[in-house]
Image (cartoon, rainbow, N blue to C red; front, top):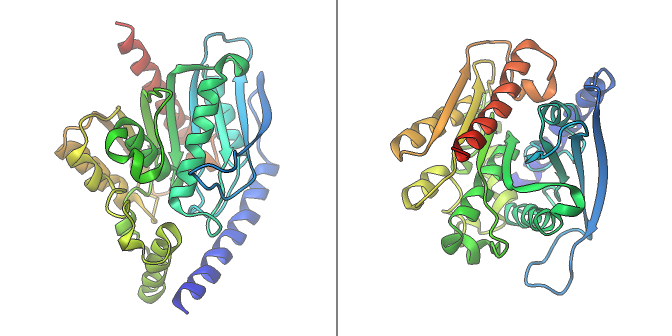
Length: 320
């Protein structure tokens, strides 16, 4: 009964969010000179990984005037249950303007897919891009991830699986056979602590129902018995991680939802000596993922430029 109530609350939240997003998109001004191409690839059948959809759709955004473009995969947020490859359109356009190939995808949403299914779909796309980098004019040796909110968690966890593949590959059925290397990640108002999805503002009972329901949505029934249940959060990953690429953590005072999670992540990065940079914007009006929703705002430009500059600095250090 609680889970049915959670699904009803959650779906109602995203129906309202969709109305707001549509109004925002109607007023978007896209940067000039950026090309967007849409693609669709079929998931293989009769494999050990059982995909929840028949195909995967993705976009590539790029500035045709700039050659040798490194790659950013942007994983959209939406509570794991909302959004598609076009949700962060304007955000992706702005990243591409700074000289990157930006890729976005439509992963299968909850409640049809669990967390592990979404990660497997991301890996399928990354492998496809790596295998076909000449076809898409990509530099997959210079590969970065960014994600907002739930997409930040997916970005973090996918990175953890790839860089510690000998520990997590079998658990998630994600094997790094193509030697994928992730140079850095930017986590934007991310929700990386799945065991701590409470603490939300509002009614305590509703908050509790949402926390319990979200765990069932992500892990499935009897989630605590899943092999990956205790191998998702940063405080579970970092203590046994031999290596981790640099992390840019972005949050803001106006984020009443999950700013505490970014602070926790910064603390854990300090505790476990993970290379990172922490930006916490002191602006009450800078709401959850404001820089994705309104990329033309002054603070949004600062945030989004911080992402591309952070990745460029990593590339420059790698060339020294």
